[in-house]
Length: 112
Length: 104
Image 1: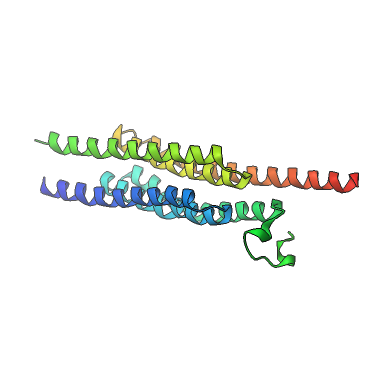
Image 2: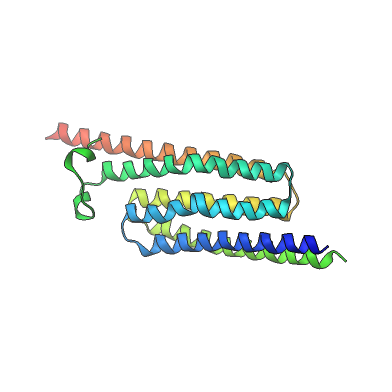
């Protein structure tokens, strides 16, 4: 009984850390004013936020197939999130005509 | 004897769901307001991540294990959506550019 309560408290603390990470992500997206800065804040939730939240849920769930599938989601997002961030950054650099107004770029590296 | 623990789990899960719903609404406002295409895609990606956590919490709250499968499929489909949207917008931009150069 007391062990169940200890598991509940540890899982709740870890889940709350993940939810705070999501709050920081949304705050960062509203705080910055340019897409490439906003993406920095948004990529934090993709890996760190969902990772910590799902670790909290895995502690709630115990050792079974549901927690294994949640771990698979986290591992998949570790691979998928950098790729999608890279593609969005390349879209922005390719299509933005006035990129020099926001950040320093080398002229030959912007051409794709 | 065990009902107090179940009540505590219920409170934590429902509280987390309400918090994530507010975050989802803020992301949606960002996706509507975003001045550029890349802003909207970033906000959509964030909404996908938050919905994944909501599905994972529901899998434990409703005690339905198969919702975790839906979580995996949602992750794959949202990754695919980002890739397809970026490719489509880059193709649209290149076609517009070619048409402008031909018009000159």
